[in-house]
Length: 247
Image 1 (cartoon, rainbow, N blue to C red):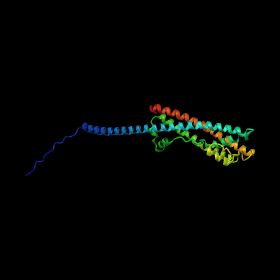
Image 2 (cartoon, helix red, strand yellow):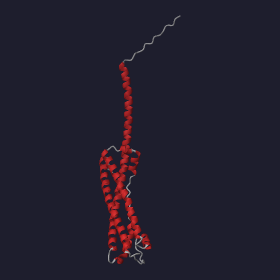
Image 3 (spheres, rainbow, N blue to C red):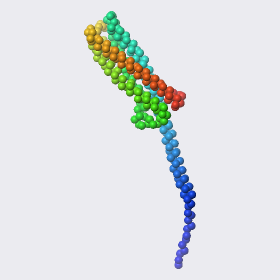
Image 4 (tube, rainbow, N blue to C red):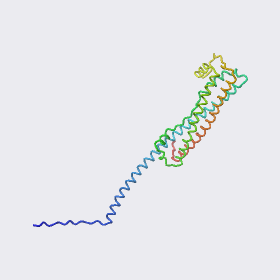
């Protein structure tokens, strides 16, 4: 006995249906891509705000460092001027108490300026500077931190001049008296003051070291003032571009 075959009726898709299926699949993938891209963009903008805020705080700290140095340098320069005049004065020995005090206190000043590069270094070394999409701000930030090398490099030169000054002062001033001045920030009342040499060549070497130290600080002062102006301008730009009203 033969079993009858059952014929299934199949519906053949039209090409428009295939096109619709493809379109729906494409749309789903595209929307997924857009959503993911939006999430990444939003996350990047949030990171940008955080890093910009941190950079802003670093710059504020820099302006404080610069301002304090410039203030310190005024006192330093005044002390060197006075010391140079007294050392060359005909009645020098009448002013030995002040000469000793000034010669010792000169070494208590700030000789290195170290700006805060923490946030910028983090961005630079991790390749995250790309997060700062405002090209004007990004350019000014890079320029500012590049110019810091001028200060950092000059720090070493100033310290070299300070080392030379310390060496030459040891040939002119009594070490024990200088020690007590550093301890008490005043000349000991019972000190029998005198220079340990009257050799004009030795004294001249000391004064030469003094004026080279003075000159190195003058240039340092110029570089620090320029960076203070740059930092102040960059703070204003960031505040304007990122609407940091509360800063």
